[in-house]
Structures are given as C-alpha cells and as structure tokens.
Amino acid sequence: MAEVEKKPIKITETILRDAHQSLIATRMPTELMLPILDKLDKVGYHSLECWGGATFDASLRFLKEDPWDRLRKIRDGVKNTKLQMLFRGQNILGYRPYADDVVEYFVQKSIANGIDIIRIFDCLNDLRNLQAAVDATNKEKAQSGKGHAQIALSYTLGDAYTMEYWTEMARKIEDMGADSICIKDMAGLLLPYKAAELITEMKKNTKLPIQLHTHYTSGVASMTYLKAVEAGVDVIDTAMSPFALGTSQPATEVMVETFKGTPYDTGFDQKLLAEIADYFRPYREECLNNGLLSPKVLGVNIKTLLYQVPGGMLSNMVSQLKEQNAEDRYEEVLQEIPRVRKDLGEPPLVTPSSQIVGTQAVFNVLMGERYKMATKETKAVLRGEYGQTVKPMSQEVIDKVIPGEKRITHRPADDIPNELDKLESEMKQYKQQDEDVLSYALFPQVATDFFKYREAQQTGVDAKKADAENGAYPV
Ligand SMILES: [Mn+2]
Image (cartoon, rainbow, N blue to C red):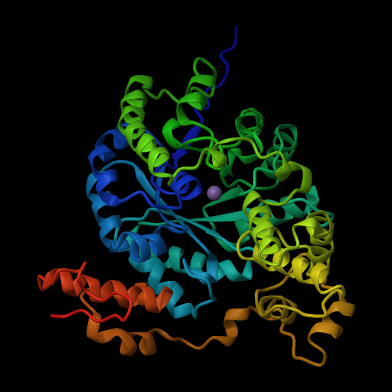
C-alpha cells in the first residue's frame, strides 16, 4: 500500500501578540513572557508572533515599556524559533501613512533587533501601500541574510471579492517579491468549505507558501483550519488554550491533537504544550478576576456572520448610538453600513476602514440625509488618500462630499517627503538609542512621555510622584 505523503502542518503561535491583543487589550507585560520563552522555543513552531500590531503602542502608552527592549529580550530567550511581527504597510505600527525613509528604517531596525518574518497588510488591500515595506525587507535580506516579507490580504466578503480577485492578488503578490502570502481574516468571516475552495484555487496560482490567520469570533475558526489544511494550506495561526477562542485564535493544543496520526501531524509534544498552558493559566485567572479579560469576548458572536461586519465595529457603533440617545436606530444603521461601504469602493472592513464606514453610516442615519455631514476620514478616503479601492467610489457621493476637490490616483506615500531627519531633530534631546526616533515617529506624544518617564527612572526620581499629566518630572 502506498504511503500517504507526509505534510506536517506548520504553526505560528500568537500568545505573545494577537492572543492577548484580542482578549486583554494587548496588556501582557514583557516580564510575564520571559520565563516561558525557553519552553516556547522547544515546541517546534514555524514562528512565534510576538511584536507589532498594537503591542508597540500598548507597551509605550500603558505598560511604560520600551518595545525595542521587549523585542531584544524575546530574541535573547528564543534561540531557534523564528520571530514574527505584524506591520500595517505604509502606516507601520501607527495611524497615519509615513514617508518611505521611515518605513525602510523601521523594517531595518526590526530585523536588526530580532524579527525574522514581517507580515505586512493594508486595510484596502492596495498592494502599492505594501511595496516600500516589502522592498525594505528584501534589501535587508540581501544584505544580512535575515528577513522574510509576508503579504497579508485582509479577507472580506462582497461583490468585488470573487475567486478571481483572490487568485489574481496571489499572482501579484508573488510578482512583488514577497516570500509568502497570508489570508488575514480578522473578523472570522471565512467559512470552512469556502476556505477549502479559496486555498485550492490560490494554490493553483502561486508557488508561495500560504498561511491562514483567523479569529474564533464567529465560532467556525477551527473547522475553517481543518478544511484549509486538507486543501493544502501551509501554516495556521493558533494560540495556547489559556488565551485562545472567543475573539482570539483556535487553541494550539486542540489543532495539534486534531492532526495527530494524520499526514498533517505536527509532531509537537503535548506534555510540553501542557506545561506552557499551565504557566499561562494563572495569568488568565488573574485577568478574569481584575476584569481585563471579559467573559463577553470569550463567547460566539453570531452577529459577525449575520451582518458580515467585525464584532469590534458593532460595539463601536452601539456606543456611538448610545451617546446620541439613538439606540433605536441600530437596525437602520446596520442596513446603511453596506451602502456606505459600496459608496466608498467596497473596502474590507478592518482598522481603520471599519471605523470610517461605521461612523459615516451612523452620521447618515442620524442626520436624516445621507452625507449631509461627512467625517474627515470619509473625505480622505474619497480623495484617494488611503489608496485605491477594489471598486470605483460613487461619483454622486464624491460630488456631494468633496465637490471640485483634487483626487489622487497615485500611491499616497508619493506625496510624503522623507521625514526621518526632521523627526530626529524634534526628539534628539531624548535619544538614548537609534530606535528611539522610530518610537517617536509613530507616537510623538506617547513616546515623549515615555522618554521622560525613562529618564526619571534612570535619575532615581520616583516616577509615581512625577506629574505625568503636565509632563513635569522633577529631577
Ligand atoms: Mn488577528
């Protein structure tokens, strides 16, 4: 009897990044991560996602930690496993587009401090917004031999997102010089049989490895992984059980056990995984007790599937309506969302496009007239400042919201002159390491506060007594 060809499924562990970003607002401190790195390193993961996304902001803003220092400490403790980060294309890890020189420098420093795989995405899937980061990664790879550029497509549903769209994107990503592709399903919209079809078709169109990233939010995620693995996906993202499920990823141990004895067997040691889970479980309990982890995010949110919008977007919308004493308009707004999305060229609904569409839908309903008022962000999308959408935007809406204004069709970052020197001159009094200018570039105010805090710590001033609000630190 012919042996079935073995194809062990590879796993990216998310407990150090997306798992705690999704469940406890990215609050896991570095000190909690360090003692378990040795065991995590022994599992045999494809990679450990541990940096980028919201971790950078949360470290500086809430944990008063230097994110670069975190990365170096994780690198010190993880000798064998690749380290992975999430990167928002031209927005890096911030909320505005940056000049190419900042993007390139950030990539260079991320790799120099220990990152191996950079997962790069754009909220409109406009590949032009990813080119600078991919080129920078490839440049670093050519020079130091380190670095892997993965392009992530934000998965979404809609008329424009046909099978041809996804397969065509796979081809383009390969042409751009990326090393792998990720299907990034932030809202848990990808259903099991659809996943099988998607992976099968994409595999026909690209030689690049394909990784699948989803969230448990709608309750289908582990089934989606099962079908995707059977269809030939190369890597899946999972989280150790104490921080799995709900708005996080499927549990690592469960997926490992599922594939045991099959051609997809990971070969991971369940005893070792159990020891890692034992380590994180008391922290989960602590987070449940102090309210950082809410049982609300641990269930199945079926509305995600019903309305095809991310759970976070719905809760945002409800709070906006509450503020206006207009909770009774909920259904109307829900129906307005797909219309606004169409007007704006049917973008995927992920940060920040989800907030832009959601807020505009609330405005349209509450004002009693569509686009009577438009947000600054809606205007920017219509001007092309976020990039190109898959479908054309509504001419009628363009004429009403930005009449006679200039629209751009080129890559938005082409309008941003190099800015590293200027940023450097603004923050040089606080600079203790090269990387500080990048922290400042991303979050000028938060980073400055952090630099002052750091100085106060170093000079022995009790930072708790320092006047954080006014930024006055008695020395
Ligand atoms: Mn995610």
